Amino acid sequence: MIRIRNLTKVYSTASGHIKALDSVNLDIEKGDIFGIIGLSGAGKSTLLRCINLLEKPTSGSIEVDGVEMTRLSPRELKEMRKKIGMVFQHFNLLSSRTVRENVAFPLEISGFDRKTINKKVEDLLELVGLSEKAEIYPSQLSGGQKQRVGIARALASDPKVLLCDEATSALDPETTMSILNLLKDINKKLGITMVIITHEMNVIKQICNKVAVIEKSRVVEHGPTIEVFSNPRTETARNFLKSIAFSQIPEELKTRINALNHGHLEGRVVKIDFFGEITARPVISGIVKKFGVDANILYGNIDHIQGTPFGTLVVEFLGKNGTADRALQHLKDLGLDVEVVENG
Ligand SMILES: Nc1ncnc2c1ncn2[C@@H]1O[C@H](COP(=O)(O)OP(=O)(O)OP(=O)(O)O)[C@@H](O)[C@H]1O
Ligand SMILES: [Mg+2]
Image (tube, rainbow, N blue to C red; front, side, top):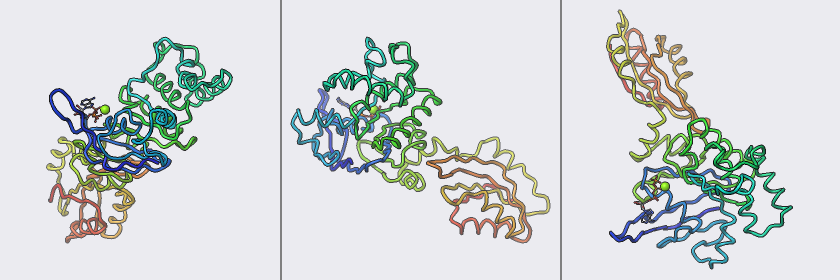
């Protein structure tokens, strides 16, 4: 659906040149909810704005639905932009227009007749759950409701692609969830391809099937979300992952671990990081049976990315005659990421 090749964008300013994008290559397929995550200033907004040519690339190509965007005439570009909806962080609603009139705005510009516009707006407001608020002005809406209007307006021209620039960054966590669910719903119902820019790992985790990590103007990792975050290759990706996985053992727990008394048994306290099919819990009960050790779970933390569990467990294994060590080796052989925290 979107094919980006060698995209470079250099801003020329009074104080010199800023390379905001450096040879970016990306393929976004039809139906993807494609997340682009990176720190502030990495080039995310620039990349998004290059897709609909709000920002003119310095070099490189951008193909949307088979059309090379950089070669379009102004008139062709105007037509093409109807296929590409955009949702903004600060909603960009017209304050002097009601909710209904805001959503109708792009349709009026396109010259649709009143009857068609009314029907379309009804449908869109229903889709985003705002039928009741049609005659209200933006100033009387909550942030989440404003964003619903922004989304309805972006959908008015029946776009094939929806570009969202930090669409949830101005919202509280609960409202963020409801907007993310709405976007997911729209992706499913209408089959619209979405490109979602964010600096929040939570957004990626909730709805993006694919992700690209952008760092200092370059895409440093990309692929299916599960793959990128089950095997992060860059520090940036690892840090984003850490922002949702509390893989650090709490200090207070460390103190308690050091004070553990294993009695006459050999004790091994291990931290197990797991991701994907190997969920640690059944593995541990299997080990208890197989090696005849005891296992106490001291700490656990599980989260999900697109339904795939990942997390950390801290477990104390107690056994005799080397069974605890054999149990540990078995966990490692299974491919789990095991670290011994304490030997006793
Ligand atoms: N219009 C502009 N003129 C000059 N420099 C710009 C312009 N827009 C962006 N930049 C610069 O390009 C770089 C990338 O900016 P961009 O807005 O794409 O980052 P971002 O990843 O979206 O950051 P944020 O998370 O803060 O929104 C930054 O160094 C920024 O200062
Ligand atoms: Mg930005």
